Amino acid sequence: MGRGAVGFHLEEIDWGSNESERARSKDFVLRATALAASGHRWGELGYHPTRVHDHLDQFRIMVEYFTPPTSSSPYQHFPGPDVAMASCTRHRVLSGLPYWEGCFLCNQA
Image (cartoon, rainbow, N blue to C red):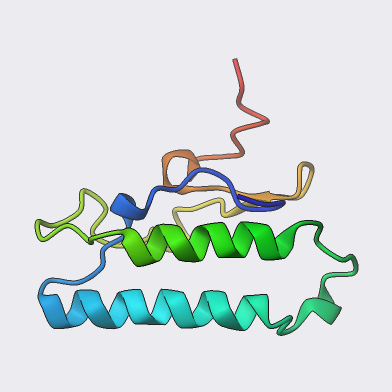
């Protein structure tokens, strides 16, 4: 997607156990994406993300056309901070669910 986020698929998110919860979750993601596109808190980044509007628009379209699965996800919840190494200070990336045990760049074979 963009600088800082690595390795997640929409199918890996627990969108909810019923249609109402899935619709509410999808609406939340779309509203959060629109808020990010508006420039909310960009001043805290210390840089201007290049092509951010292209990336966010691409993500918005993916979410809009995505149909959350009705069966439960293999990921019932996100691991807590006691289990997850969420980011790598060396590479400045956030780790996705398959890489919770460490940075995918640090652990490349």
